[in-house]
Image (cartoon, rainbow, N blue to C red; front, side, top):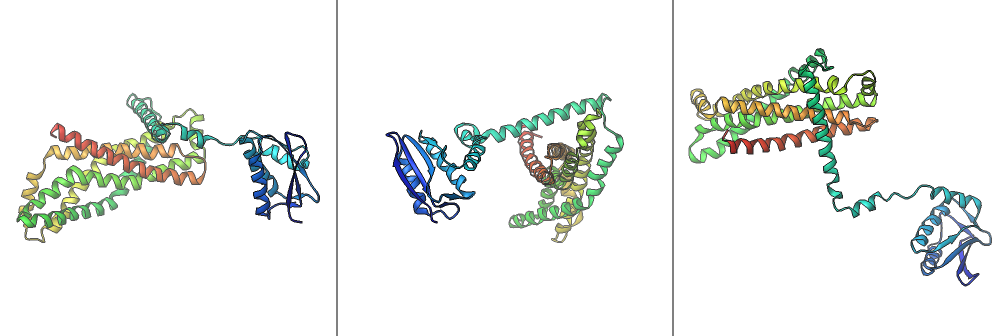
Length: 366
């Protein structure tokens, strides 16, 4: 039997709504519109009662719940005392938990769009502060760090990364040489391609590309490793045994990265210059001219700048990777999210730090 609704005025202030037929999933839109229109027009009390052959299924309490919310927003009262007991219990259960108003309340706060940024900055500074205290404990001999863990991290951050750094450094040097040759040929100044390759690799591209590679390779691996330990409650077990996770897990990786990054940067400098030579020497430039221009292109201070950048980038990689792993959630999906967040955060930190250091060195005349 199809649903239909009738209205009657029991008292001067109470509208009686009688529901007949089957009220369920296949509710007639005309009947639904008629009932909702009538409810919008009423500003007093409303009483619902079952009519002839009234029946319902699980869709009816859902629809009735939405009607209750609309009536409540109008300031009206809805009497359900005549409805079946099962319907009243379901609606009582639905009203037991108040609706989530966090989305609406966030729209009213003027600084809501910046809340995520402020929270991220606070978490970053807090983790950085813990790293500083862990470093002080290491210097004073009160750290829980094991030497074997530092050696393992050195192997992960150094020898195992040589292959990919070799390939990328040579290709970056070749790219710089090609770009410089195309532009400088217009002025007959091809000899200065060596200066471009040497200075570009030593001060900028060598450290930057090495850092990006290490962020995607080693930083992501460490984030996944620490995230898996977090999921398996191994980090909580260390805390229970009185071992500081920051000393035991983070400091070996920090020490390894800060040591290895300047060395990897020097290795990248050399290979980038070799890659540039492979291009330049095929374009009417002798090895002696190439080396002579390189010696005038950069000096020890430029090498020191590149190595310093590498050390800073290594610190940022550990900061992003280990923080993402240590703050990982308790599921396998959270480990993947932590790995992704580690790579993205590390690259953002690296680019921002590189821009800041370049401005600083320019104004200092370094």
